Length: 242
Ligand SMILES: Nc1ncnc2c1ncn2[C@@H]1O[C@H](COP(=O)(O)OP(=O)(O)OP(=O)(O)O)[C@@H](O)[C@H]1O
Ligand SMILES: [Mg+2]
Image 1 (tube, protein in one colour):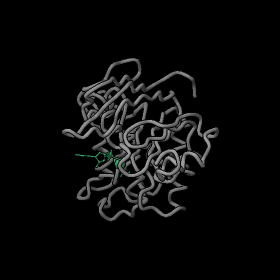
Image 2 (tube, helix red, strand yellow):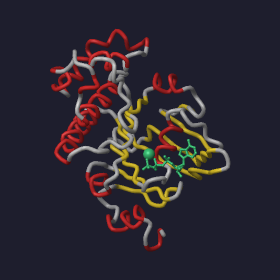
Image 3 (cartoon, helix red, strand yellow):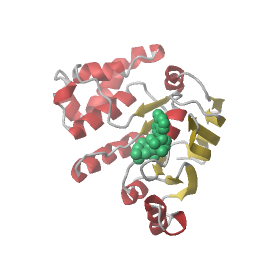
Image 4 (cartoon, helix red, strand yellow):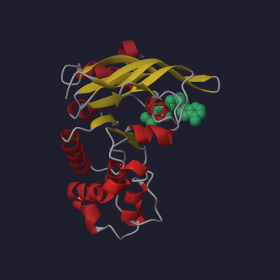
């Protein structure tokens, strides 16, 4: 990990109609880090992530990736620049096999030649997906679906992976497994921006954290140095964060 910034979010607002879901959001995501985004339901985490991916258009502010302004760029172009998202709820293709799902992640023309190499990498990281490569994705367990979503993200050979609600509905042992893989992938240089509903786990598994309340950033810093009690106050909307 370096101090270099791979993703800068600068003073971003996103509204749905008249409702300003996030406001004045500024974040610097360091290259090679695991950065977590912490906040209660409705805090604006997914709205922000969707803005990074070009799914939402900011009304104000800029998003700079790898030194390039990607604000308002098409999602497919943003993926080509090197960011992919494993979205909330995995969003795998139920009617396709595990392998077909993976191949859907490898649609970037420049990366097609690397496809076999990427599949090998994914199967080494997630042997269970290799075992089930010919099975329909609809037969996968919750944990396996999340693994498939992350594996599919790897298939575009990204510099950065965004995982929204990485542990949603999963048993603790499976969550541990998934974070182990995240740390392993991170070890090969991929930056992660992660949302997990559990404050302690978010801090424990990341280098840096940003805490959001009601659409704004209220706290940030090195995860090991953030006061967990205060992060929880923000998360639960108590004390000065009410
Ligand atoms: N498409 C939409 N249209 C209108 N309002 C929306 C839309 N999507 C989200 N919102 C509102 O914007 C705010 C932020 O929602 P968002 O989904 O970004 O929060 P979140 O932090 O991801 O929450 P969760 O933890 O529940 O996933 C909420 O008040 C939500 O109701
Ligand atoms: Mg969300």
